[in-house]
Amino acid sequence: MNKCKKYDVIIVGAGVSGTAIASAMAPYNLSLCVIEKTNDISNGASKANSGIVHAGYDAKPDTLMSRFNVRGNAMYPGLCERLDVPFKLIGSYVVAFNSKELKILQELKERGEKNGVPDLKILNADEVHSNEPKLNPEIIGALYAPTAGVVSPYELSIAFMEHAMDNGAELSLENPVTDINRSDNGFIVKTKNDTFEAKILINAAGAYADKIHNMVMEPSFTLFARRGEYFLLDKYAGHSVDHVIFQCPSELGKGVLIAPTAHENIIVGPNAEDVDDPEAVETTQNGLNEVWGSALRTLPNLPKEQVITTFSGMRAEPSTGDFIIRDYDEAPGFIDVAGIKSPGLSAAPAIAEYVSDLVKKHIHLVEKDNYKPERRKIIRFHTLTHEDKAKLVKNDPLYGRIICRCEGVTEAEIVDCIHRNAGAHTLDAVKRRTRSGGGRCQGGFCGPRIIDILSRELNIAKETICKDSSASRIILGETKGEGKQ
Image (cartoon, rainbow, N blue to C red; front, side, top):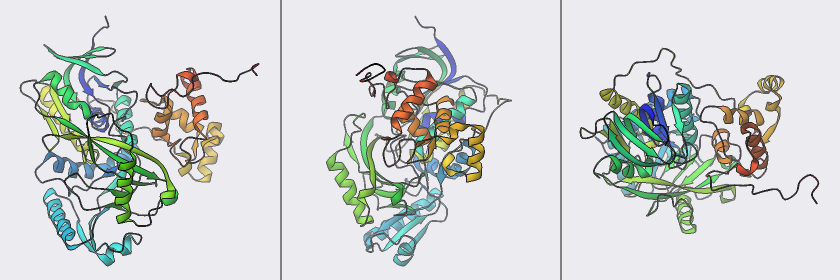
């Protein structure tokens, strides 16, 4: 029988909420472990979303969504600088095509002002088209929110976890929770591979947070899976728009958006489709047609020839209509962080701050003497000057070997991402950390070379390396080799 591993705090789920909480707990002298059912960080909703840091006008006043959205938005610039995460403050437009939608913009502006969103402004048609000349000329106005931005959501989640691990946290991957029982000291968490004990148990299990809650307490909420499908366009389409462009929202969400990404691509989507299976993240022809057709209303000349990939993500829609973030008198030390749909990414830093305060209610926290507030900087070779590139290559020849031509990623960058805390072990894990395979050819050129590097650096057989999940092996065996014909 495996020995029980004991911690002060266990977090179930390594999405943006769970990793943000781990990072927020990093200044304190405690033992902490994040348990994740998949084989990497941000493998659920956190990797497959729009990457928008919302200003905060959309959520209803006096909700957790509005409170944490506005607070989280304000935290982003400093946070991303400290953790070295790509983030751009570009502002957003909600566009109107008729007088009815202009009234909705005014309602959103008033709601945003109640929520504390600064500097909201209604633009007229001339102002809209002066700033975004490629938009549909039938647009007659827009709500402008200058505090909106874009971030790389998976890189943010990875940075949170790396920062937590740099400060002593642990990560347990491919280890789904199977049962939870209460103990005199807190909670016994049984997983596929281990048994854990924790004084504090934080449920940040994404689409499965209701299932984790029900292992500890009586059911009190339900999560529904809502799929959204997207197009990603090449960087050649990068100036189709310069702001995040929303259509007027509906009862199903914020509608189809068109926006630059943190890496200068263009993202288009999502639609909203309720599905039974939270793992049903395939794309559909009907769904993609719906997204593209809706986007053309905003941007009639959207260049479909620049599409380099499509994907879908899953949102956990809560039956309560709001985030579920709370502790319980009936189960002291158990904290739910559930139903974190949009604007969950925007709200994540503020949610983590709040949950950290909840933890303080249950255990005494002492700050570390050796806390590291910043993550070690990542060298992004393609962004450097010729002089700085030459210096790097002189000191480390691996910086002189371009592996991913589309994104300009070097072998040294890939090696670094493998050996950092929370490092890469799969092809897609390397892509999420370095952008290798994220360009126009989608890994067609660099994929085999990255397999070679992973095999060498991890000292594992190429046949064991996966594209993403453990079910996505790439190489089954040799077809030719030395001495073979």
